[in-house]
Amino acid sequence: MLFDEWLNPLSERLLFSKNYGEDKTTVGFHTDKTQYGRREKVVTTLSLTPSPSGRVGEGHFSVAITDDQDIAVDSSTTILSSFLLTSELRGYIENPSFYLHDTDASTVALDYLMMTHGWRRYTVPDAVKGNPKSPRIPFQTSQEISGNVKIPTSSRPVTDSEVSILTRDGDFGITATDETGAFSFHDFEYPDSTSFYIQALGRRGSGSVELTLDGETFPRPVHAVQSPIVEIPAIRELTKSEPETNDFMVKAEQRARFDEDMWVILLDEVEITARRIERKFDEPRLQFVLNENSDVTIGKEEIERAASGSITVIDLIRKTAPAGVNVTEDGRISIRGLDSLQGGTYPLIIIDGVPGSLDILQVDAVASIDFFKGVGASSFGVRGANGVISITTKTGATGIIQENKGLYSKVYTPLGYQKPVEFYSPTYETLESKHLTIPDFRTTVFWKPDVVVAEKGEAGFEFYTSDFPTTYSVVIEGLTTDGRIIRQVEKIQVK
Image (cartoon, rainbow, N blue to C red):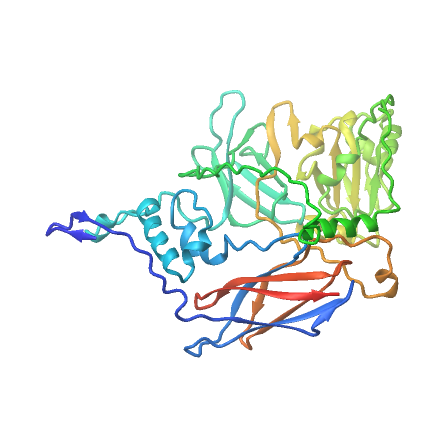
């Protein structure tokens, strides 16, 4: 870039520096045998070989093993082209790996590419003049749940309202609203599908407030890259002169031999005339009971029998209470007995997953009751020291508890982080499993995204072959801890 004396750009020329291969590091790939049979165990070892400068260290790699007769290894897009080229250029690039080849044709083409696709996410003149721009979207360091509390009748904010949050695992937190009625829980992380039970109370502990939760917000994408329209070539018939050249057809014939005992029967249309099965009231119970291992559970049928003649929920509990749970005539509940942690005081009452009061419930709203007396109550911490009574209502599946005076409790399930899932790979350790008649049709035989080479410079993994004689392609891609990019393709023979 050419500047004038006031650091204004006059002209520029974007170049691509191919210096990524000057200090090339390779991965040593070794197997315990030179070839394998069907459903046989393969033991592999990865090792980082020294670079020309003698550097050997740690690295993180992904390994994908596929059947060559089913899947062709993608050589047009690799970790090199993704990290060094397509992630830095705007627009679609066909066969990006071609531009990184060490040939004169690819060098010239890469120069043309930089003149047509070159762009940057920053303004060089501003940076040179000392006026850099900060990112508009800050880094996300934790997740947050926020909202506000107000009086339903007047919509005025409730100051110093006690807002509590509870999870199935027993995690508990309390905060208070500010002068605008707003509150927030932050500095925590949670996996996806985690439900949070949030309750707001008034200044004197009443439930005559309205709780509103803020929705999740996500940054909008700045640029949208349109995928090219790829025309699917017409399927041509194989001629007699080239039956052996199509590996896919050979593999299809092998599959057909495995399926020779399978028949396909087309059935006439079937019309379902049975009545719809109504969901039982006690089915939503598990999404609100924080510890499914309750000592005693009172289900739908027992609740219906006990509801006859019961005026209050306390009467209902008195009729259904198991041994160790006592209800006095004046309505005081205590959990006693050998399994009790502490007796003589009122137990913790949970309604649809959140602490509540029995005064707000009607008898006909109760779907099930769970009693926690011993070890189960300990999962609630100090709050469960006197035992726990968990009630699930018939409308509890909606995630909202309604009271005549307002809406003060909700169940919130925001988007959390994804839990790691391991790629399924069958094991044939016994003779019975090796001789199963169910065929092994895997095309991706093994995949592991987190192979870590430690300080000793080695790592390993194991898998079992499938049922077909073929060759496997082992694609190894990753980074060393000092930033060197590695991509290798190895082969495994299966007879």
